[in-house]
Image (cartoon, rainbow, N blue to C red):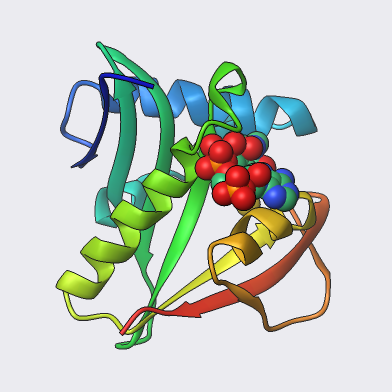
Length: 147
Ligand SMILES: CC(C)(COP(=O)(O)OP(=O)(O)OC[C@H]1O[C@@H](n2cnc3c(N)ncnc32)[C@H](O)[C@@H]1OP(=O)(O)O)[C@@H](O)C(=O)NCCC(=O)NCCS
C-alpha cells in the first residue's frame, strides 16, 4: 500500500487516457457496454480523482456538478480488480468529499450499483430511492451530508 498517491486531475492531464481505460475495463466491459458509445463531453466539467501507483492509475472517481447548489454527484467509481479491498475506494471517496466540501457543497448524491451499496453504506451514505435500472443493471440513489 506504500507509494499510492490520490490526486485530482482534469481531462487535460495526459493520464486521463488511463482513467478512460480503467472505467472501460471495470465499469463497462463487465456489463457488455463500451464508453465508445457514450457522450463523454460532460467529463470536461468533472473533477476527477485518481489513485496512482507509480505511473499507473489503479482507481478513479469523478464529481459532476448537477442543477443543485448544495449537492454534487459522485460517479464513475472504480478500483482496478487487483487493488480492490485495500482501502483505495475509501481513499478516493474521502478525497472527493473533502474537495466537494472545500468548494462549498453540503451533500454528495450518487447512483450506486446495488452490488456496491454496502461499500457506500460503509462510508456513511444512505439510500434514498427504490431500485431502478441504469446501464441495464440495478441501482439505488444514495446520499451523504458532508457539512
Ligand atoms: C466498489 C469498489 C469501488 C470498492 O473499492 P475498494 O477499493 O475495493 O473498496 P475499499 O477497500 O476502499 O473498501 C472500503 C470498505 O467498504 C467495504 N466494501 C468494499 N466493497 C464492498 C461491497 N461491494 N459491498 C459491501 N462492502 C464493500 C470494504 O470491505 C471496506 O470495509 P472496511 O473499511 O470495514 O474494511 C470496487 O470494488 C470496484 O471498483 N468495483 C467494481 C466497479 C463498481 O462496482 N463500482 C461502483 C459503481 S456504483
